[in-house]
Image (tube, rainbow, N blue to C red):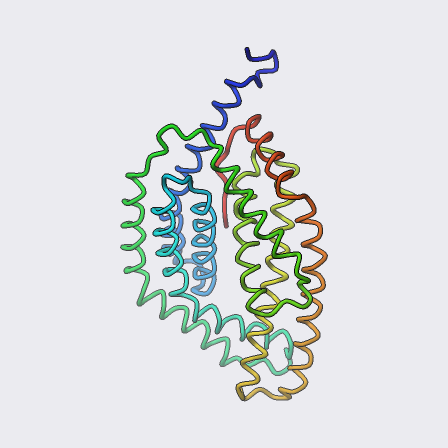
Length: 296
């Protein structure tokens, strides 16, 4: 029998079913969110591409929470979303290199690099946006057939534990000495974790929002190290940049700094063991309803 506080078994089970339906609605909303980003003509092209890629990553992170009955369908749509995101990757890389070089040597900032990055972004949006919209609408239609049947919502907690455990185990390797490939893999895990924490945040706003913010900082640290490494490779390939050797040394120092900070941030974010993280999330979800959030 339910207790007086309204948190008896029936109430808790009903709350978990609400979370399950909320997850399905959130997944179905993502194509429309992505199209809305592409339609923001008032934003500069590079920012639109950046925001579009973030929506694709958030969608992928939510799809990784899919129950076993939708696992195959979820993987297929994740693959398509990843392909759409990667289609804008080249413009993003050009913009990142121009930004890093502009910060490292502001007195000799290469305006042509920045202009090239902006032009590449505008060209990609002009050439690809319509095809991407069509593809997103197709994926949206596919999800309309999805059904959770009698799913109670426990699948969300189990999937989150898998995401957390993967990131937690990966962090056992010292981030200060990870290979670049290892760092890339870990960043993907942290990106997924950050969006999943944001999705679950309404269940325990004070704690989960704090963890989502920590995950965002960690992914930023790892991303900075990766972007700096990409710029270092650009210089090593013989790019015509004044005082390239000095810049390469400066980049090495900055990479080491970002890796040290990532290690500290990971220690705070992933301090709980996966089983405890799962138990705390389950308890919070059974007590508090979901709420629509922004992934921007």
